[in-house]
Image (cartoon, rainbow, N blue to C red; front, top):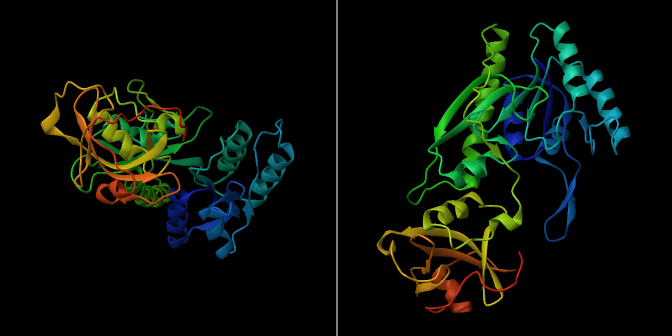
Length: 338
């Protein structure tokens, strides 16, 4: 099948590689413009662009897709590239730009003349209508969902409101040494999404792919993650904070303050023995090589992996050698900002 692929990060790169391995023809890759990253803030190409260049796939990087917007010239150039690609379907995965109506119409018009009539398909990392929006993986962990998954959705003008063509689910691990972070769950969902889009296209070629409208109840929205949201609110329960620590790993990283220093928290577990402590939330109850126990609004949290600004992630025993934190210290006070 002849495809246009629209995506940017590694989640999309996994699907693009799998589609290429399945011998689909990628006639055009749409991806975000190169971004400055790393300590040197050098421009870096997205995983999708890197794959496309390596495999001789034409690349288009519009700064915007609105024909009446600030980057109208970019949008027009993208339109020309989309029409020239002559693709049967556009596959979208974590692209980072909303597809305006003209893109949907362009692919729909192409679909009317094509054998399969698929239009634009989105690989979405949730079980729709649960977690429509920008950050479904983060929000599923943060909310304590038992399961999540991937939907292959036929795109329409709404925000992740299109019909679901195929879906698969998997458990979210909330306990033990292998509890999911957004990073680990992202990797599992990326593989699942890649498998699912290949399967969906295979079923479409066999005429066995059917659309199912999303349920009207159970709708929730996964808002984009902002750094300020990763600041730990110690008045919340230890369980909620522990989930947030995992939800914000690897980015933006849950953080708090201690004497004006910013501390990022990368590993933490609920302490079942201190469900009741009688201390102000944020108060350090114990601090040793095993962990820093902090009073929460409900229960206590043991911090196990920490990082100072400009430093490395460290086990708590190593961290305390560089920044001693004693019993009675208060976390979350001060005016430092991440």
